Image (cartoon, rainbow, N blue to C red; front, side, top):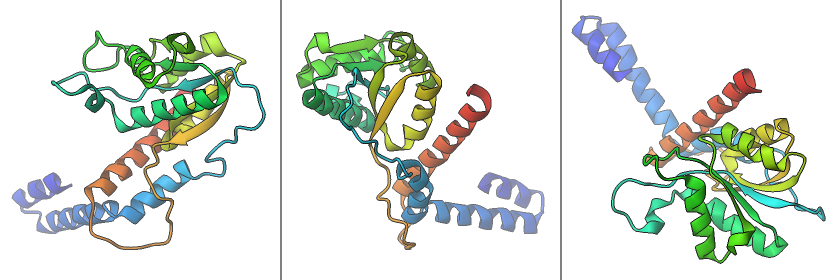
Length: 230
């Protein structure tokens, strides 16, 4: 909108240029407010079933969808893992210790370095955390959530799983698992909002902008799945 404002100004359309500039600044200020980000994220992260209960049910395994692993640049191994990957894998390890269940990791060669498969890196990381190799099932397939669930369902259709994923991801992954006939409860991690809905005003925040982007991305992804994939 700012670029369009500059173009309109060059074309001597002063009123249009001012309106575009004002609108772009207004949008920037609104969506950089932490409360606005919280309000957008709340339906995704704190819906009525925001955390499934692990009742006395016999589960077959713990499923951890892929997030991200950095393959570029010279970085320490721990710095290659995205925050959501770390939270998902560590939570899965804790659940595995508690419930004595194997962990399933998925994800193929969708990273920058196409020779690296995400699930294999996740398997190595879980081994470092103390999970025995025989208790890790690596499925090196899938470049997105849908293809990962499709790969999972080939082996675990009709099974009972615990799925560990990011809070913003839970609605969409639950729909996909159900559609693929994989029964699963969802354990949420990597929350992006505090859940605070009481309006407040603060300084504009780049973090709030990123969280707003993440919320809008997830809403669009849910809509895409509903209209084109479901």
